[in-house]
Length: 137
Image (cartoon, rainbow, N blue to C red; front, side, top):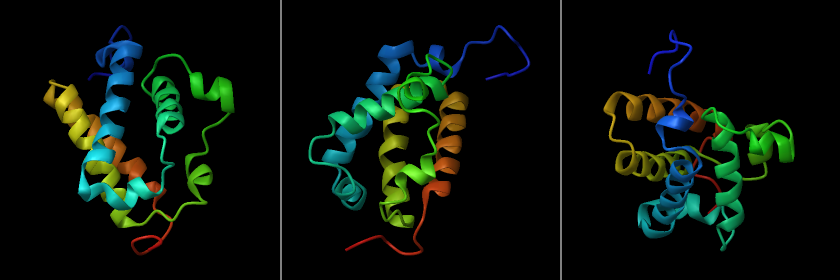
């Protein structure tokens, strides 16, 4: 994805707009529910994932270059601060990335674009780690 061309499609557009972002988020949370390898990160979420899915959709909408729904509703994301009540260690980060990486692999056919997204998500996931270990047992 070239940033030099001002008319280049945004990640939001490349993902298919609101429908594409929503599909990504739905698959991400479905994987979190389905994969035993995502047990630790799943425990950090409420039983009903609808609110979490909606928040992530709203955040990603703006982050990918679409409507800035999260900011309009909640103000600046302050991701690390908003996640500070949760013990996010390397294991939770890795489990989160397992789910997001698989969701992106299933939804994004363009390999360079997918790799760029996975790299960027990985940097954010690293930033969210707030404990040295594996989080609460």
